[in-house]
Length: 195
Image (cartoon, rainbow, N blue to C red):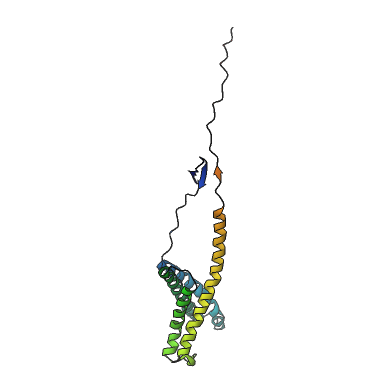
């Protein structure tokens, strides 16, 4: 804790902490990809464990759990990486933090996720083959979902910021100046005793 001088001569306590540097968008994308990959792997492995236990404790069960975990890790980690990196880049480019940024990024992610079914007929989604409405629907639904989550987390972020600002707005304690003390008078030395 350091102190600075106020105009009236009193000392005001200040903080020595340096300002925190903001992470780059690439750093946010990489960190989000790693976090999402770990979470996705755990969720994928847990979801596949029921089917794997039906196979018994065998190599096939372990392979099933491993493949499901890897697939889920890549999907969720990739989604979060592109979402957070893209949203951060749009916020810096537009110099605005609003719901438009996650809407645009979510739309691109939704369209990119629906493209394989648009280009190649998939057995589990035959309705999406060469169907532009499926692309638009995937893009809009993902865009709206991303904007909803952004608005949900932004409201909690604003509440935390308001609480932090309220704490920062309280005045710092004023330390009164310390006046020099006068020396305490000492009694004169006593005369030596006569024998």
